[in-house]
Length: 399
Image (tube, rainbow, N blue to C red; front, side, top):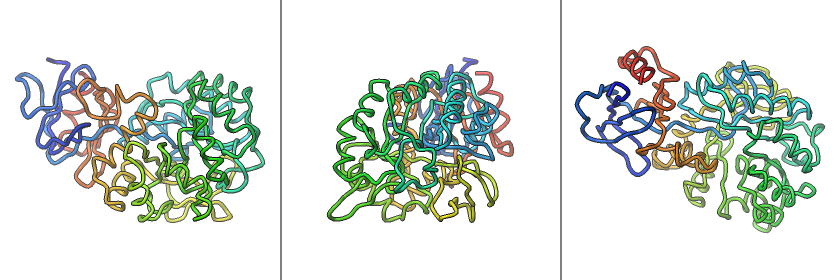
């Protein structure tokens, strides 16, 4: 049994239900059991009042701690990976932003390399292309000078540059050939998300009917709801499709968060950070792609006042949604773990705590602060000051 160990926590948020004062048994990097007792001989790490949740998955993140996916640097990707692990994230889609075509291809190449390597923290699950194929209205922090038409040739170049690791591409439904390109992307196993758009309700519905998967950071960067024209926002909320939600208390009013959660099933809501390179750093001046931004009180804006991503962390988004929208904590957790895993088609192996799945876990204190993060049972982040930290580090890295 020397390759097995157990974590005992005050609460385990498992896929089917919550367990209290139970053991989570991990063997060979997988979840072997959830039980009120543990087999003799298996080392137990007592976590006291801690809560064990599935490792979080951030589907839409640009950077952290001074590093950006657009740096096209393995060193930057490692920094982002390590930083995310400190916040309970075990996997992420490295997200680009509007820039030159060559810089975009360079970033995709590094994403492709990173997705096939073992990272120091959160693992790169693929790439997310946000940029280039938008329209000027609701462009947000994207520089329209670099917008391009979307063609099969450009799609093929992005996929090739990413070493087949491009998972999501965002576009505006009103661009030329949007529906045709959406169908083409689906054939290439790339999901389409709709955003930075002034599309009408019908244009959005046409794109969804062509295979688009949902809305980019819903309400933000898209035509809002009018009683005679529901717009892109109305379409993605009313249809059986995914919506990304930035629950930082800035991008969406608490009443809007409640509305989204009432309109959409939990499995159709994905919490994202949309974090930029200013995440984890002090207020000041930064760049997002080709756009100058200023961060004040943790809020990133362009010179014109448009929001420019966030400095949010995903575990904070979970707490915010639970508190602001009166959502059960387990539902909020799964919107940042099981929902994105299902979106990516990897829910059979990760995204929730269930027997047979990878032991991708975050250990939180009752307030939601991350104490440790595990990927396949191995520690990738550990708050060293905790009483269980030495035992956790020793057992998980030798299991």
